[in-house]
Length: 315
Image (cartoon, rainbow, N blue to C red; front, side, top):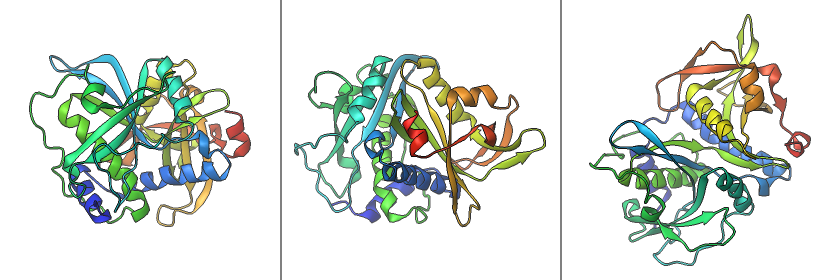
């Protein structure tokens, strides 16, 4: 059976960097779902996954094929044999994915199976499409990606040697499951991907959520503000372009100091408000999750709302 240590070893090879920014991001994602559950909205929030689109191989161009993929979390010291009975996906995720299906984002819940559970490289995935009227029959990963461009040559996605000791034990299985799925489909197909921190099923709309842990910065013109890296900003803009009943949120776990991580408040802003009030001039951010320098979109802190039961009920 796969152990927690084996998961860490895999992550050390698949993640290019496990800096403090990466770790704080992982912690914030898990703690956000815990916080929403404590407020009574646990059935309205999904775990993380990937949003994926096809890249054509003849030129750097994208097609309209877009997928949302949510893996079952592999638990340490558990068995995942081929042909095992599949448990239902988490409550509420069908409704969340129905909204995505209406605007052309097809969603799947993926179940791992191992020929040798002690070896992550033997994993195969069974994919159940969500958000459609009929329950459907699980299919293989190759069938899910049948319209994607196949990768013509091998690429080593497990070439790093990152230190994963900073990731707390309870958070390793979810990150391992996401990375295991990512490497599986990127080994076979040309893709551009971005992570899904969570999706919230609101009273009025469905919201992909970008979650960050931050202390506010200050500017003489903007006053206090929170920064959002350009990459996540573009992803939220993609959701806005799709529209329909799909909106999006930028959620901040505001802390007093990065070393203590003491919570000040959970805050959020809708993308519509973010786009309206964000500064048109990019700022310089710190190290991003890949370890490089980031450019950030700056949003005034005053435009964020406090996240609580009342504000969640209004979404």
